[in-house]
Each structure stands twice: as structure tokens, then as C-alpha cells.
Length: 415
Image 1 (cartoon, rainbow, N blue to C red):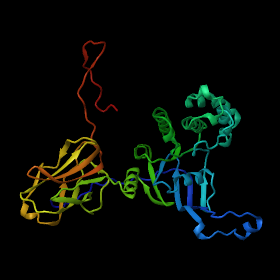
Image 2 (cartoon, rainbow, N blue to C red; image 1 turned 60 degrees about the vertical axis):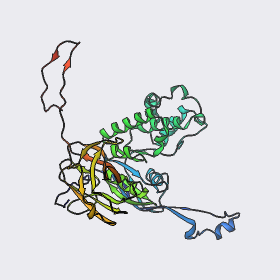
Image 3 (tube, rainbow, N blue to C red; image 1 turned 45 degrees about the vertical axis):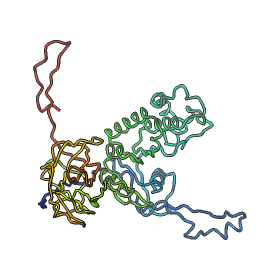
Image 4 (cartoon, rainbow, N blue to C red; image 1 turned 90 degrees about the vertical axis):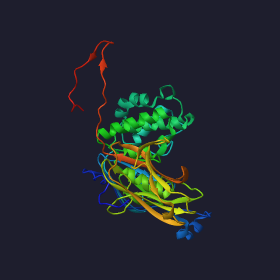
């Protein structure tokens, strides 16, 4: 249980080298709250200046640069300024302070129904929306069938959109946005409204845009989407940028901000675990991602409420998500501590992980404290990710038309 040198930290993703397409510096946006509206021109002139108490700052001194080819996710608690920032970057809102420079054609999908006229048909709204995005009518003529096919709204395209459901709005809006060949695609969390099949279709198109080197900026509360799609993620809170960096680290900070940072405990009558963390052996800083073969230190603090009558056994193990049985144990399986060494009070313990096992994926790290095979206390850290594993070979054979197995093998370095 001694600490040795080493680190399992993953280096932050290096910034992409490329042309800056979105450059926001010192951006602030405020909204006025009028408790009593003016009823005459004279009163309006007298009450023109609002007090500071009547002003709500949705954004405060936001700096954000997005380069060509980046996919940047915006996340944060409700009311943190995410949607307001997208509207400022899209040119819908003007900032009160700061500057915004956007280069290239921008296609944005923000609030439901934005850019649509409810009295017009779906067909007419395709042309209206395309015109708002700066697309010539001739180009919209050429793209129209592809837009309708992608939206899957062919039977309804000539009905007024005021009769559309929210999901149909999203289908049509996203179909227009992705077919006008934008340099920058800006998407708010409206995609959460669509059904699962259409969401997969949209995500596949976003991945296609990434392969083409498009710039994508979107808001989402879905941690999985941000981690799988984004090259960077930005955490906002009360209109300010709290963190801008690798997606997984951003999600970790968001969970901590929301009070759901993935550590769960079970308290017993004899003891409770008041701290449980995985830290860098050299710095003591919490680790958020781990590399196969790297070292780490697991530390915990146990408050003993009543001295055990027999020796205590500590078990540190790794579980697959949602699975009760461990897939790996820190050896030995049980670390025993004599009862005399656990008087009432707080005790600090630590384990040195010599190397993370070669089993990349997402796991939970669990700690159990037992006395006479009875659980004394427990804790669990969810969202543990191990990366950098080797590619494994799975033995197998192929049979053609139920005939003999094909014995010829492909080169081992085939990718």
C-alpha cells in the first residue's frame, strides 16, 4: 500500500492546426427584464435606462475559437447560456460586448420551427429556409428531391407545416441544413426530439460531415454523443466558460458540477467510506482516464463507527457496467487488516495499481469492506475508462457454401 512514481494520465488532445472559422472574443449578452412597461412615449424616455437589477447576463466574456474540421460540443446545466451562444454565433442575436467573426456558409438548426412559416407548406418552407441560408433557388431546385428523401416527409411535403409534429419539424429543418453544403453546421439539442431511427440517420450524416472536414458545433446533454462525436467540448455555467478541452474531461467536470460525479457509497453500522478516488501516483491529482499498463493509486478514507470484532477484509475490483460480478481483482483478492488497527475514527488507505489490465472499455471500480463475510461498507466509481489496449486475434474459420473450411489466411497486418 505504498505510493511509487508513475502516471496513468492521458495527455490532452492537441489543438487542431487549421483555419479558424469561428472566432468569438470577450462575448457578452444581456437581456433586460421590464417589471413595469411604459405606457407613453414620455415614460419610455424617462425609464430608458434600466438598473443593473433589471439586467440578466446570459453570456459573460466568452472566448471561443473553432477551427476547420473540428467538432465542438457545448454542454452545461440548463440556463448556462449554451443556446444563447449558438444564436450569437449564428448571427440571430448580436452581442452587447465582444466580437464574433464567422467565415464560410453557416447552416443552423436551433429552436423548433425557427426559419419556418407555419402557414406555408413544407415545399415552400424548404425554399424559404434555403434562401435564408443564402442558397440560390436554382441550387435548391437541384437539391429538393434529396432534401425530401432524407426527411422522409414526401407524403406531407405539400401540407402547411403548422400541422407538423415537432419531430417532423426537426426532420425537415435538419434535411435542409445538411444539404446546402455548409462550411459550418450549428445544431441545438433539437435532435433529441426525433425518433431513434432518425437520430441515427442524423448522427451518420454528422459523421459523414466530419470525414469531409466540415466544422460542427452543437449543444447536447447526452454525454455519450459528446464523447463519441466531438474533438473538443466546452462547459458553460452561468454564461461563462468553465472548461474547454477533451470531451471526457469536460463531461467529468459537468457531472461534478451537477453533483453526479459517479461515486456511490453504501454505509454500514460499523463503518462508512467518506472518500474514494483514483489519483496520479506522482502528483496526487485525480485521474479521469487510464492507459493500459500505466500505474495509478487508489485512495480512500474510512470512518470506523464501531471497532470490528474480527479482522477486516478489503476487496478492490473492476466491474463491467451493470454487471454485479467482477471482471478483475486487485491481487490479492482480499487485503486483511487486524481489528486492533481499526479503532473508532478515520483511517486512510491506498492501493498501488502497478498496471491497468489490457481490457480497454468502460468499467466501474468497486471497494468492499467485509468482516466475517458481512459487508461493512462499500463504494463504487462509475465511468472508469481504460484505453490503449492491444488488438486481439480471435481464432475462426470461414466455410463457403457449407463446404470445406478455407485454410488460406490473410496477412496479419491487414487493417
